[in-house]
Length: 198
Image (cartoon, rainbow, N blue to C red; front, side, top):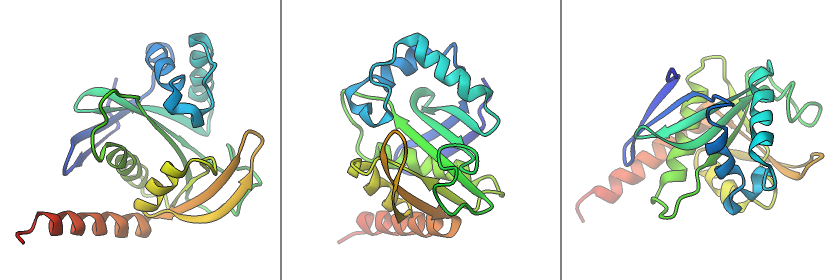
């Protein structure tokens, strides 16, 4: 399938995104979304057919897309992009022109790679802001998902506040292009400082 975006992380190398194939990728996705570490994805009890059906639904939706992320050529994460004026957050927040919603999920691994999840969210954000019409990224993770809250803060998100959704209590957070760039510049400066001679 055609690569839609490539991002090079200074520490971990090449990350790419391609459109998800709901049929061909369903078996792989099933192992990811039903893993205990993916509890906040809320598909723990899904069977392979239900996973296929869910991503066929997303593929057919005019305001929701799913992509398979690869690290060094191997499937490693899932990314979803949606229009919050039509999906997930309709009537639940102060929508602005240029808002784009995002979900991401890293594949479960036996031996976690230091900095990997941070590199994934950075790559996903770089992809979203590669579209010049994107002015702000909006996310609505579960209020209990403290790990992703920390990641979101690291790439520039600011918390708007809790909102009630039918399936969860979510922590609405937003990140402008300028906030993302500032966070990236700050992280790069920290990396340079760490590598400088004492």
